[in-house]
Image (cartoon, rainbow, N blue to C red; front, side, top):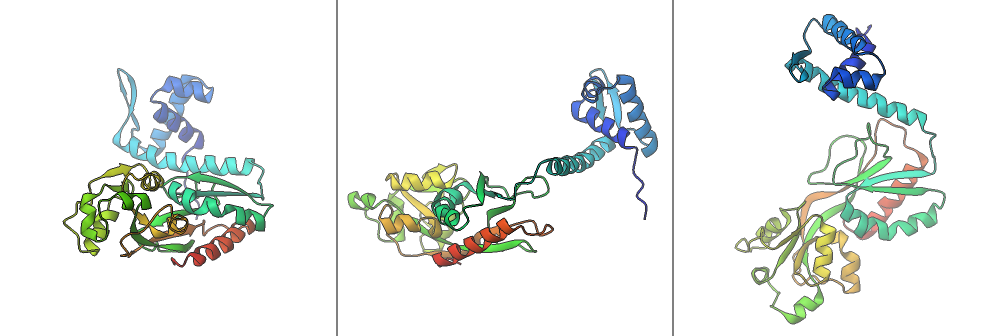
Amino acid sequence: MLRRLPPLNAVRAFEAVARNGSVTRAARELSVTQGAVSRHVGTLEHWLDMKLFVRTQRGVELTAQGATYFRALRGALDQIDHATRQLQQSPDENLLRLKLPPTFAIRWLVPRLAAFHALHPGIDVQITTSHDRADFDREDIDACIHSEREPPAGPGFRKLVGEVLLPVCSPRLLERGPRLEQPGDLARHVLLCSLNRPNDWPAWLAAAGAPHVDGNSGLKFENAALAYQAAIDELGVMIAQRALVEDDLRSGRLAAPIALPLRTSGGYYLAYPPHRPRSARVAAFEDWIVREAQATGEG
């Protein structure tokens, strides 16, 4: 079936005018005259049989139909731009580009990367941190790790570690008091948490039978890595994901005074684009990180 596409030069001119909000700026960007841009836009409006712009004292503004069309075209043109840049770049088969949440990177992956590099010295790892999932259609990312409250559906996901919540604090905080033996004792302590995970304390307190303790009080940090450091520095008690504080508990930097772990339905997942062939470097990373995750016992 043949696709009936509009004149592509006209589409390009329309997108430039809509994005710039000006025929003059669009013409300058496209290195053509204002008259040429106006003719292209007119051609597209005639082809679509609808007005895309209205003229105002300040220039041009999109009509409702024009705004809808612009949003759709912008996404398509972004994908064309991304695909073009990918083709123009010489592929580096030795570069593994990962995207993952900052706290997971700092507290779980980075301390283990030396082991991966020892096994695969020819693979260079490039890490980007973000709380957002990777958009494999628009980002130059080979694989990502992200947190999910529920198991994600569809192909391209592999569970790494489950989510077990547990209060932790510095042992020195326990030495100087106040007492911290029962869930209700938390009412006399400063509670620490991440702004990205506001429900952790209320969920744990409800499960522990201490709903009277205000789980929304205390100190809140931009990410959990800062909150964990605050707990080590004796600022209060952090509601931790156990997999992210194992090394601290083992070394004694942190203690878990109330042994009431709460397993949730959440977890961290490895994701890669299911519509692309899996590269050797991604396969090597997946095999390695799955073994590392299984060793934690938090599956």
